[in-house]
Image 1 (cartoon, helix red, strand yellow):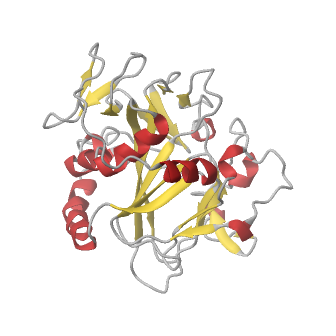
Image 2 (cartoon, rainbow, N blue to C red):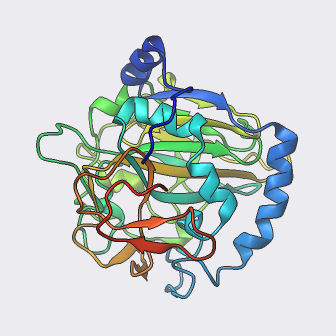
Length: 322
């Protein structure tokens, strides 16, 4: 992959702040009017899941709908989005020059929806029915998690349910991802947690706590208010949550999260299916996207999104452009 000039790398001060706090931003990416035009053009494409990598799979009632996961693999705007230099240069400042995008997800919040539980994610095994980790860092890495880039496709305010972070909390995991959460549809939008309506898509993240009596220090929580078209980057091991949507406005809040790793990390090493909160889909069409540098390890499957149409596997060619 030809080296290009890095223009959005983190400054030393920004890098220090990111490693101290676990997050950084928001940063400007799109003008509000530009993001709104993109969103209008995007909506019909998202409704058409025929080319989505998990679009043909069906899930049981109450399970996570996987059809809109990893839509960067079939929607051109999202493929361009995850490779934007404004994003990739900053992520590479944290992870190093060889970076892949392994996951993307939409996070809608509708009027009246509850907030999201405080949570952390290290290897993502808690969401998988097989209980296998979805990502595995090298043994000598000393840490885990993924760098998430969360973009506000619509305005994210305290009224519409913006993200919240607890600065510096990424250094200690308070949850055991080998534990199991039980689905309870009747709890959705009904559970008060320390004065805030919070849940986790029908699950209760407190069931994973190492210490059942521990509570996150909400007094340190920082709301991540973002205008439409901005993004924030954070470690998935950072304590993060979201506020409820107040319902005082009809505008939904829509976030798009892209997740990045160094190419040394193994992605889905123990499974040929994606299992998330009761949903399951084949990984036959899945591939990581190389967004920076080269792949010197050869233990992950990649797809090339520079080619029009449905992505195809890249085999045996480390460092293909993505």
